[in-house]
Amino acid sequence: MAEQAQGDTEAMYNFFNEIGIISQLSTAMFEQRLPDGLTLSQFSVLNWFARVDTQATPGRLAKAFQVTGGAMTNTLKKLEAKKLITVMPDESSGRKKRVTMTKKGRRLRDKAIASTAPLLIEFAELFPVEKIRRSTRQLAQVRQYLDDYRYR
Image (cartoon, rainbow, N blue to C red):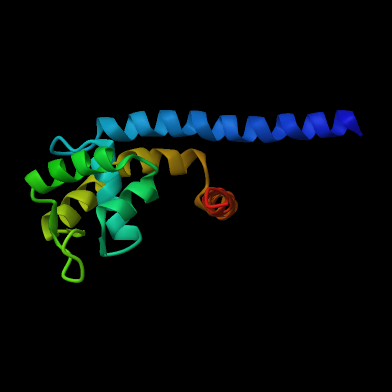
């Protein structure tokens, strides 16, 4: 029984190790193709707005990305300087701010994704899309578990 548990633990470690390596390699490939001086952290914020919500406070974004408030403020200032987001006072609170993505931000986010199309087409030739869809559903379950786990 102890051997089984050790083997299972090793399998789980290997699973997360592969995900980590894939993340590093895919991030490096993606960063090389980001347009207009966009950094990965800036793209990630724009992508969050496209995927999750149309507005947020800086605190909500910092929590979502698991970074400090200062780090998020720095990223938001750079995005705002490029006119990719707007940061405005929250009408319901004198201290809070509301962040939204601009149309220019949406276009640049879409352009960044389009810039990866050649990579994805090559990838799809090696890995059939239906297999990727099945794997993605399983990975989404893992992500949901880990996302919930951080709030325990």
